[in-house]
Image: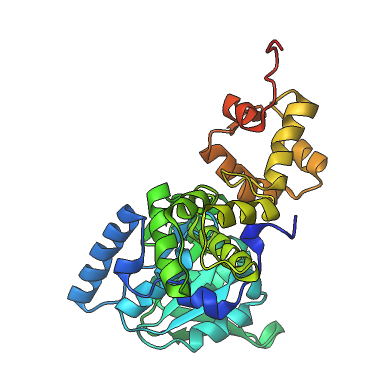
Length: 333
């Protein structure tokens, strides 16, 4: 996968933390999810209980981790974080669970990458707050059951379809985060600009918002790159010219397409006559992993109306031809 994508860019964690909303009123968008969460949280507080376990689904950068932080803050609980790939052995999961305190929030990112052995440990922990362990080996092995304190598991995933049914069914509620509206992205950019202490012209906000892939994380990173450009070139703020030049240097077009996005569309058009083409064949032609195509490129392209998944394969739609300035199959010169 391309290492130059704006979505995978490494950033100063202190800056990212500063831009992360710390109050519910600062969390822009996802109104339906926030409304449902407010009801669940209020009911749990009224009963004096911990919340049900929650599953958050959606593309990277849409605010799943931020929601976990806000929920933990709402209940004044500690947020313990880990990720699916970090849990290699059942002992890893057992160590985390036995160190939980009453009211803690356990956040597991990339939950679809939890292996099945770890899941077996999670099932009784989620259902009955029990941790079942095998002590010893062979004929002398025995089962040990430990009580766990009340806790809430919040799992986040970009690939809900890869979660096992037994694990998915144990969550009390599932929320799917959507791409953000242009107005929401503009609001987020305005808030971030104030935190970073930079002046951003309204025309620049429009340009950056349109290229932000409807994703707050990308919007903030584009803003930081525009700030860098302005500072290096002695500009007092980010104006329309700075925003356009920033996108040009990053090779990002006006709707947020990066080189690999455009290459994916062009390969389908030029090599496969616009499709349909299977994702395996497409992955080989792009020299990309299938998961990268399905997780990173396709969702946004489909949201723009540039690409369609069909039973026969991927098909490029008319809007993509127009955007790329390419002639559609059968279209006269």
